[in-house]
Amino acid sequence: MSPRGVATPDVCEQLFAAAERVVEKYGPGALTSRAVTTEAGCAKGLLHAHFAGMDEFVAELCLDRFARTAAKARSLSALAGENTVADNLDAVARALFDSGGPAISGLAMTRHGAALRIREALEGGAPGFDAIQEAVTGYLRAEQKLGRVAETVDPGTVALAVVGTAHHLLMTGWPGTPDPRPAMTRLVTALVES
Picture 1 (cartoon, rainbow, N blue to C red):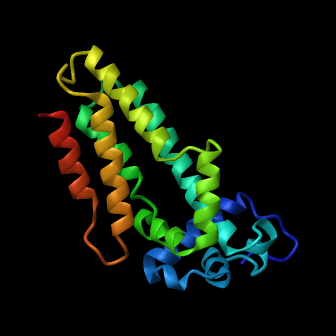
Picture 2 (picture 1 turned 30 degrees about the horizontal axis):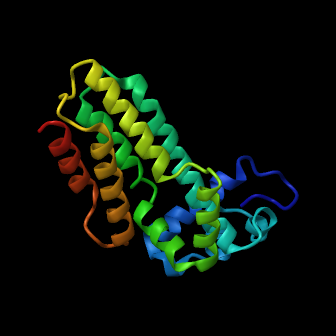
Picture 3 (picture 1 turned 135 degrees about the horizontal axis):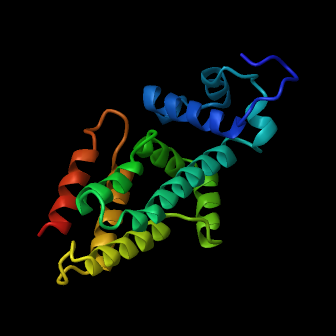
């Protein structure tokens, strides 16, 4: 545990990662500030020193993970011509499920204040599913130019299908349900290799 008065480097990420572990191990109902700080091995008041409450904390956790996945999706265009198209898309789709994605998404849905903060942030331009969809569309267009995706494939429709399916699987999954990653892999493969 960090001693009182000693700076904790990258405190937000430390708390976010601890929250993901708590939710993954024990489910959304176990997420409390005490559970997070205990899991993080830090002072009990650290979470409230950085966030106004659990709704703000959960919202910021979700928005941070959306931003990370959107950044990964934006990096897809640099992969045009490398690996396989299905593998590249699958890596982005799977990123949505990493770090307890289904459980964290479910948690945000059960906290009205967090859901409202997330919606407001997304409406204000924070990266979310739209940013991921746009990046996937751009990537598929780049692969079409290289001849690795058939001209008959509509990049926007494939991107919508990938992101929409990921969203569906995130919203309907919870700890203990089957791993959604294999279904995403099958979908991505079917969409780009047909």
